[in-house]
Length: 195
Image (cartoon, rainbow, N blue to C red):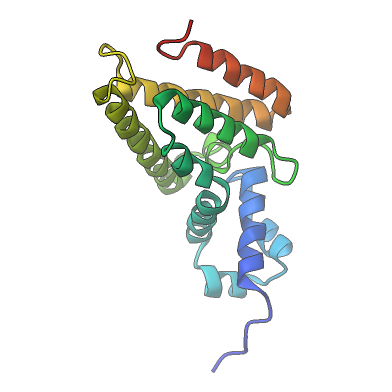
């Protein structure tokens, strides 16, 4: 029987999440992880598997703890409110002083080489889940007459997520919350039915 674990795996996972968020996937070394988490390499591998598995766990936690606003936004009564809440939700998460700037998925994907293709694929798959959910919500809005008959729900969903990805890059480069909120206001002016 091995020695009992001498660290809190939950705290260690949170530290890993923050390191990946700040430095990206490939920018975060195993040494960064073990030093930051205060554990040895055997403890990291024994508890979390390899770096890729640890990243996937961190991404799952990120979605649960920092992206819950997205699913709540889909419950808004009209498509414009959905779009607004998604964009402002991303803007607020990306610029909170209590977190690293930007978006974990964007920060991780931006620096991925072909060597991290599996991680990029995971990030793309997760993004597609959100895009499909947003598309379905806008399709419902179109059926209900909340969006113009000539609107394209898939394009609208892609537009909202593209704006949010752009604000993530802006936040990572130091643009503050007020400025990003102004960008969201500008984006919302192009929403179907806006004057």
